[in-house]
Structures are given as structure tokens and as C-alpha cells.
Image (tube, rainbow, N blue to C red; front, side):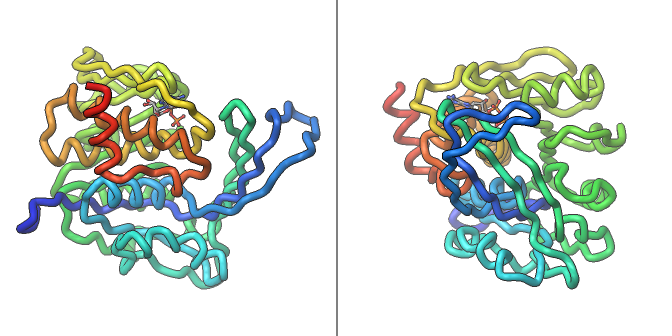
Length: 290
Ligand code: ADP
């Protein structure tokens, strides 16, 4: 389903949030108050982040999502709209607020996140209109039943980012051609992760990422060394980049290196969405590293 200029197409089914980010000297421990924070507001949500990442990396991208009938919706969708992501299947849900994520980021680049899903909870299976696309990319910040319905009916490549970790059915895991998890999520799912026929990518933060099938390692990539100042959205950038590389039929080693390069660049700028690199930057970065 690629068009005449050969760009691939990706339908992202997922969450839209407004991120309210507090930059703090260090993260609080439970019960502790840390003061001196500086607050900023950024568009976010794993679905929106991954849609913007895929779009900036050159895929024709549509986002299927749900926002509130409030001012935060426009703020949350602003960068997607500006980048040209197709938002025709992104609906305003009556009576729900736009999802909000409260994020604390330390000077060391670590984060803590609390999410109020709001309208993301209203994304029901019966309201789904999946546009035709080469790949479906989804995460776990929307109702699982909606995701299961979409995955059961989608004819192309299915990429699942199992984040945040929660119980999902075996048929859903087996339906995925590509599963992406970080180390914590990999531990949550355990052996079940490697049960299905698809590829499994596990990310290890500054230590890079590995690709498996049936529990057997097929490829590994180191994370390029960068000055990481905010890792929020690094996993989203990695997931979208790997999905784009897969639909482009890049070799596994190349696809993993491409995703690690994109994700590394995403850690060098504050905010999940402003930090997402475009295709030209990732390719220049890969060339420079040889
Ligand atoms: P998540 O953000 O979902 O917790 P990770 O922390 O594993 O996931 O990061 C995802 C990917 O982002 C990593 O595989 C790596 O490619 C990249 N990344 C994360 N942190 C860094 C870092 N400090 N330096 C370079 N790349 C990083």
C-alpha cells in the first residue's frame, strides 16, 4: 500500500495526553516533597508520540484516538496537526477530559509518571475506523478490547508496544508481528513474551536494544553515546522507528541501529514530542557514526 513516492503508511491506534512536566533537581521518594520545580506543558501520550515519530521519520501516518471536548485537546494535538498526521479518526469524546500525564524529570534525566487517561478510556471498539495502512502500531494506554478488535481485523503488519505493562490475552500476543518492550515490561511478561511467532524487541536504556524470535537473539545494537537530558518518549521514538524500518523491509541489524539512533537523539531535547527527530537528522547521525 505504499504510494508513488514509496513512503510507507502507518495507522497508530493509541492514547493522546497533555504532558505536564516538572523539572526537578531529583525525583521525590514516596511521601517526600521536592521543591524548586520548573513546569512546562507538552503534547504527549504514547499513541500521539509514536504517531508523530513515525510521521517525522517519513511514514504517512494516521492516528486513531480519543480526546476531550476541552482546550487541552487542541494543545495535545498541535504538533501532530503541524506535522501533517491524519487526525480524521481522532474523535472528541463527549463528557470526558483530555488525558493528562503528570511527569517529573530529574536533572539526571530519570522520570516518574502518573497518568489520568480521561478520553482515552472512551476509545470503544464499535467506534473504530481503521484507515488502510501497511502497519498498525498500538500500545496499552487504550482499552484492551479496542486493541484486540483492531488487531483481529487489521490485514497488515501488527506492531505492539506492550506499555504500560498489563495483562493481555495470548491471542493478542500471538497476533503481533513485532512486540516492543523495555526491560521492566519484559520482566513483567516473562516467557509469554517469546511464545508467539513474531519478533520481540527489548530496550535496555543507555545499553541499547536486542531483537529476538522464539527467545533466540537475532540482532543487538548499542545505544549511541549522547548527552541525555530527558528520556521521556525515548521508548516511543524507538518503537515507531523500528516499526517504520520493519515496513520498509530494512535488515534486522539496520532496523535496530536505526531505532537506537532515533531514540538516542530523542533523549537530547526536553519533552517527548519536541525531541522526536526527523528522518534527515537520524540518517546524518548514523552516517557520522560510520
Ligand atoms: P523506555 O523509555 O520505554 O523506558 P528505554 O529506557 O529502554 O525505554 O529506552 C528506549 C531506547 O531509547 C533504548 O533502547 C535506547 O535506544 C534509547 N535510549 C534510552 N536512554 C538512552 C541514553 N541515555 N542514551 C542513548 N540512548 C538511550
